Image (cartoon, rainbow, N blue to C red):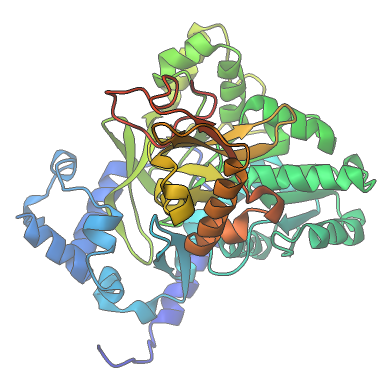
Amino acid sequence: MEPAVFDEDRPGRVLAGLREFYETRPATTPGPGAETALALFHDVAATVPAYGSFLRDHGVDPAAVRTVEDFARLPLLDKESYHRRYPLPQLCRHGRLDACDMVAVSSGSSGSPTVWPRSVLDERHVAARFEQVFRDGFRAAGRSTLAVICFALGNWVGGMYTAASCRHLAAKGYPITVATPGNDLDEILRVVGELGPHFDQVVLLGYPPFVKNVVDAGLARGVDWPAYDIRLVLAGEVFSEQWRDLVGGRAGMTDPCHDSASLYGTADAGVLGNETPVSIRARRFLAGRPEAARELFGDSRLPTLVQYDPVSRYFETRDGTLLFTGDNGVPLIRYHIADEGGVVPFDAMVEFCRKHDFDPTAGHSGDEAVPKLPFVYVFGRSLFTVSFFGANVYPENVTVGLERADIGEKVTGKFVLLAEEDADRDRRLSVVVELAPGVRPDPGLAPVIAESIRAELLRLNSEFAHYVPPEYQTPAVVLRGTGDPEFFPPGVKHRYTRPSGAN
C-alpha cells in the first residue's frame, strides 16, 4: 500500500468544483452526453488501475476508442466482474482510497456489504438533482423550507447523501434548513411539530412506505399536516399514482405535480434522475391510459419516470435493462445496474403524449422553465429482488430461512417473494412457499416460517434491518401445494420474484 501523503492540491480542486456548482443552475437542455462519457472513459482508463486492468483483460486498447460508436462496444461493468474483482483502492483514481472522504454502503445478496467511496465533489451531481426538485417543483427559492431527512442514517447511502445534498442547496442560497431525525418516527413528528411552524413549507424525504407511515401516524396523533404545507421527496420504490393521491390527500397536498417528487437513485452512483412536473404529468396521464403506457414502455407495469442530465449520467440500454456512465469516487463506465427500463428523448415523449391528445408541458406557469431533458423509466430489478421500504430483499436471504431443519423437510425450497399494497396502500412483504410432496397445509407452520425468514433477513441484510420498521419485518407467509399452477407450475423455469400485482 502506498504511504499516505498530504494532498496540497485538493483544496484548490474542491473549491473550484464547488464554486462551479454554486454559481451554475442545473441544466434544462441536454448537453453532449455521449462525448462527455467518451472523455470520461479515456480519463478513467489512464488513472484508475482496476479499469486499466479490466480493459487489458478484455483486449481493449483505449487509444483505439475514438468515437461514440467505439464507446458503445466497450465491455460492460457490473459488481461481480468489476467491483468485487479488484481491491477497493484500485477502483479509485491513482489507486488512492484516501482521496475519497466518505463511503456509502449497500447490502448484497449474501448480506456482505458493497462499499462505494466518494468525495465531496461527487455530491455535486446528486445535489443538482435535488436542486431541480426543490427549485422547480417546490419553488424553494422563495419559500423557507424545513427539510426533514427520514431516510436511515449511517453508512447507508440514503440519509447521509440526502442531508449533504440539501446542505449544498442551503449553501447555494436557498432558504433551506435541514433536520436529520432519520427513520425514527417519534423524532420525526417531534421535529415537525417543534420546527415546522417556523417555515413556509416542510419537506419529508424518505422511502415511500415509511413516509406513508409517518403521515398516518401523525394523523393518528392529531397532527395537522395541511398547516405545515407538506412536500415529499421519495426514493427506492416504484409507487402508483393512486398511492401519490392517497398519501397526498392525507397530508393535505393539493398539487400532485409540484407537491412530491421521486428520485431514481442507487448506492453505486447516488441519484441518477428525478421526477419533474413534466414527468409527473406524463406519468399520471399514462397511469390512466394503460394501453398507451404499454405501447410506450412495452410493459403493463407503470415504471418510475424521471428526467436526467446526460452530461452527468449517460444512460444506455441493453436487452431491456439500463447501463450508465458517470464520474464518482469509483468512476463507472457502461455500468450494468440490471434495472429493467429504457430511455425516451424529451421530444419523443412529448410527441407521444400529444399523439394521445395530451401535452405534459401545458401545465407549466409562465415563469416556470420546462426542462427539455431526456427521460429514463425504471421498473426495477423485479427478476432478482423485491424493494421494500427502500431495502433490496434478495431471494437468497429468504432461502436461508427455509433451510432450518424443522422447516426444510416440509417445503421444497421454492417460493415467490412479493411486496404488495393492501387496500389502505400500505406495503406488505409476502412469501408464497411450496410445500413438499405429501405435506398438507398446517396452520401452525406459516408463522414458524415467517419468523425464520424474518430472523435471517435481519441477520443477513443490513438494509432490511435498518430500513424496515419492526412491525413490517415479519412477512406474510402463504403455503401452496406442490406444483401449484399459479405459483409453481411444473416444467417451467421458476422465478423467485414477480412484479407486484402479477398473477
